[in-house]
Image (cartoon, rainbow, N blue to C red; front, side, top):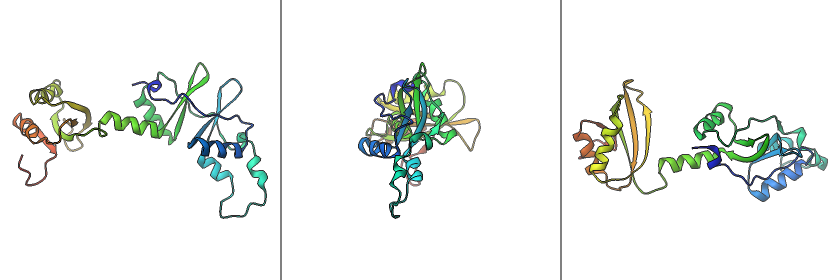
Length: 215
């Protein structure tokens, strides 16, 4: 999946000469937490977040004697030369950039100009969509040998049971290095017959597998 498929293209922006008060007003109006700062050519020169604004302004518990604080230009508090992405970047690689750099937003640039923005909330929602948890169904975790063709073997069981698979994730097994964990979300609220079929083929079902569960 590419960044251009999930990025927001209607992105509110300000310029370095806009004031702290301008940014506070825009964030409240649009109910957002991040603002790209651009120049007249729509080149990204900085980013301002709600945290930047909180750190630059007095606490609401303090009496404000100098209102000129709110008239300071954004160029004084913005993060300059921020990390940017491209519309054709892969979403999973972009998620790694968020994690490695502890950032909350990523301006998306094409041909040197701002064309969109993605935030950590966008990535989280996309993860929810990809895992299928927003749809009614059941989650099953299966330990399988790490060998070619094993996913086909497991998926054939689902085919034989006439059940739709909403999503499949593969994790390394932390206990046994030569095994993988398949996490499958299935379009059924009663997976007991399916679990019986998986076990009958010799695979270990890790979840659901409560003690005393008659499957």
